[in-house]
Image (cartoon, rainbow, N blue to C red; front, side, top):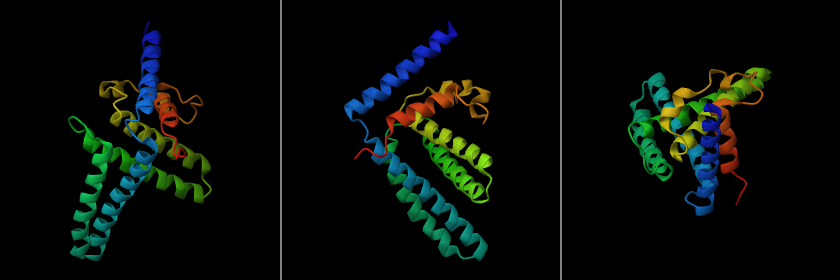
Length: 178
């Protein structure tokens, strides 16, 4: 019974993605590019903070405000409606995804491929969660039902909630479509 219910949820999820693409509610490839830009703006805010703190120069702190305003303005283009702390959760999902990508890239550069690949998988799972949340394709209540093994590197099928969400995001967001 539970398996049938989960299959129905997954099919409904796929149908929602397909409907959104047909109705052209979102230009997902542009929104994906925009989400990457927002990740970098969050990173710039962090760098201004740390540079100001390390050098003791408050002018770096002053620049945070302008970058933050730009980030907020651009985030509104993707997150049109939200409830509770979804706005803040979304920002942190993007920021964490970006950081995991950066650490993964550093691990890759040190020849630690397995560690890098694990970090890349986690980064993509967070990124997929961002999209699932903001495209209203998931019920926030379902997040607590994530299979503990879904992020395990030995899970070759990438099953569970996060794996299915990641596969759907791959289908929905094709950055190569012009």
